[in-house]
Figure (tube, rainbow, N blue to C red):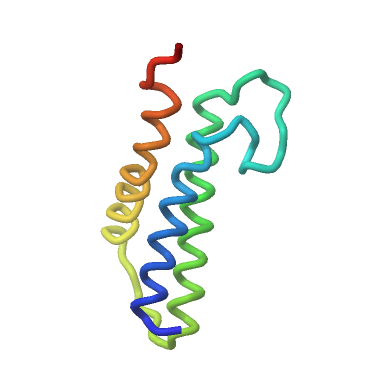
Length: 100
């Protein structure tokens, strides 16, 4: 796999993972919960866990390509903000859209 394809794969997986907590009322899309709707703090916790899962996937792809670079706190701050921005469409559909 070349670096360009790996980069686009990480972006596509990050987009899907960022919107997953807002797309359904199951935990990680698999585990049903007792509450009628999933509380907002559970969605945020799920978003945080999915951020680290996508980060691990990105690290594994970077390792497979062969050039792993050391990252500082700035990298994680920027990618965390980007992950939250990618989650915006799911947030809008869940909380800001009018229901009829």
